[in-house]
Length: 83
Image (cartoon, rainbow, N blue to C red; front, side):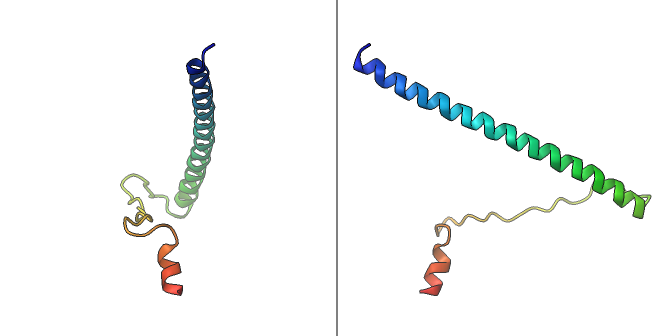
């Protein structure tokens, strides 16, 4: 095998390993989503115990503000203030 092909083999192996990592992470996140959906079903059931007329449809969803700043790196502002 020539050096050019060996370089491609190393690159391809690294990409296959990265793909496996991403698939693993997707699987873990899907498990977490299933857990959260189960918790939500149980929470809705308890809410119906307290409020028999409870309807989950149409309830607001809490949205979080983006935590990344376009101006400062993570922790940079805190370190500048403390300095």
